Structures are given as structure tokens and as C-alpha cells.
Picture 1 (tube, rainbow, N blue to C red):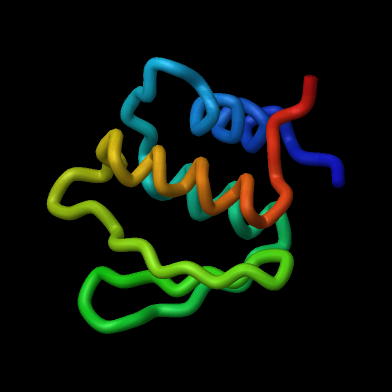
Picture 2: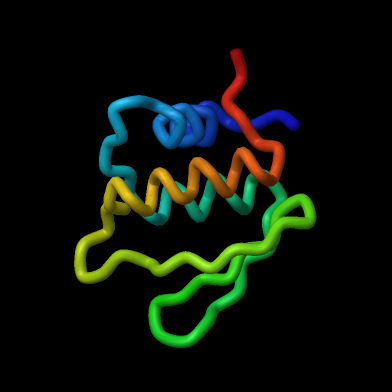
Amino acid sequence: MRLRAKHRKTLAAIFMDPVGNIPWPDIERLLRALGAELSEGRGSRVRIYLNGVRAVFHRPHPEKETNKGAVKSMRRYLAEAGVKPEG
């Protein structure tokens, strides 16, 4: 799958050590570019379905940056769904 440069940069940031803060909207755009289905849950929950793997994440609020623990969870989720950065 061909991802735009912005999506590739977000994906690389998710898998980078040490973990940094990544804006949640960038993660959602990446997931959509990968073909994930996103649906709203209760409150700040977002249900994600990608490559047969389901997960529920919480949108950060009031800030827009995703905390380090959530980035690590997203890394595990993407790896389980068969998504890894190129190279």
C-alpha cells in the first residue's frame, strides 16, 4: 500500500524509540489511509477495525497529543494488524 509522506512519517514516529507525543488527528488520518474502519464509541472512545483486528482507543482530551502509553499501545495494535514502517 502506498502511503503519503505525512502518513509514512506518522507511522515511523509510532514505531520510534524513545516514544514521542504524536497528535491524535495524525494517527486517525494514518489509520484511514491504511484502510481502517473507525467508529465512535461512548465518550472519547474510538473503535478501530484494521486487517481483521479490532481495538478501542480513547481520544486524548483536552490536549490533542497522544500520550506515550497510548502510542505504545497503537504500536502493538498496528504490529498485530500486520502494519510496520518501511525499511
